[in-house]
Image 1 (cartoon, helix red, strand yellow):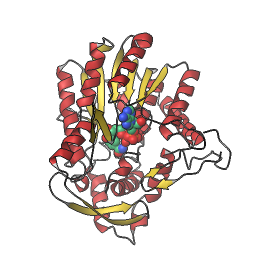
Image 2: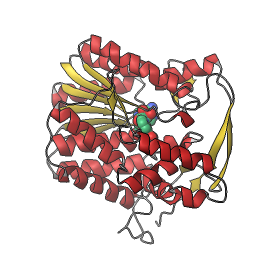
Image 3: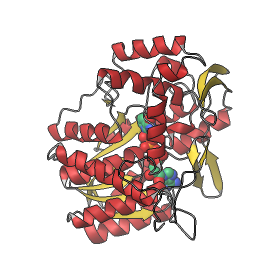
Length: 380
Ligand code: NAD
């Protein structure tokens, strides 16, 4: 069938298999062009099918020749419904990995569940013996523990916050007002996006004797500028990220090389859902592209594992890996702030890289990729 994008606000309900395949291939080529790295031989990537997790998997496989086992939560196509882009990305990755003699297996299931952990452990026992790296790149809206379902919220933690945003449905600047979360909502957000499940994974792998003693484990985080603090760093999600950081310290005490990596703000399915952040991203893209320092997920992750390979992690004073170093440079942030303050409905298009934002957004679903014939029939 011919697959077209069906965009509803910050989500697209279709995905293009050929476009996804092409983008995976492009990321593989990028990593190969940067040369060989070392440090990881057998990795588990939790949240491996899109965004930072997919770029991680590609960087490990094609930079370090690592065997990769992945966990994702995606849907296969059926009838005239397309699969999710994560599904197509993963099929493409597995195809290229097999052709290049690289081990790659993926479990499609709920990473939070015991069943998924058991399934992964069985595969490691059978195929790999032990893994020496666990990368935690989950971005999920909910987590089920027994009968209880925790839902994460994107809210402030103290007072109502109003600021500019993009209305993604109409592509105009508007205002967003974000209400404070209740204590219960904050706790639920920490349950979903904090470090509890990361630690559960590490403990389960260790107990089953499928994790190397001094394994490397990294979870991804974000800090960002003051403009987004109320909704991100100091918001409900920020509380979860603070918990993630505390978990990294606990895991270090257990003997692992455990870190959080603070990554750059980028268009992904998860970041598109956060109010205010997409407008910040579209300004950031413009400024960083003008400075020649813009990076996407693959450039970020290749650079992260190049740091791991060299042993020079570039930690900040609190021990966090800062891949947001270029984003947070004062000259970049000063320009972003100036644009933010002067932004209105009239100058929005010229002051932001909104076209770059939308290009990346469509690419998340395999659309708008050069060289793909979108009028052709494809097998979904
Ligand atoms: P994404 O939406 O692109 O990918 C999320 C991944 O998690 C997908 O592979 C999906 O299949 C998987 N997933 C979701 N729920 C799952 C479940 N229940 N079981 C198994 N797999 C599941 O997200 P992303 O933006 O790449 O985010 C990954 C991490 O990076 C998050 O911790 C996020 O906070 C962090 N981060 C993102 C940004 C950004 O700007 N996008 C910046 C810094 C840090």
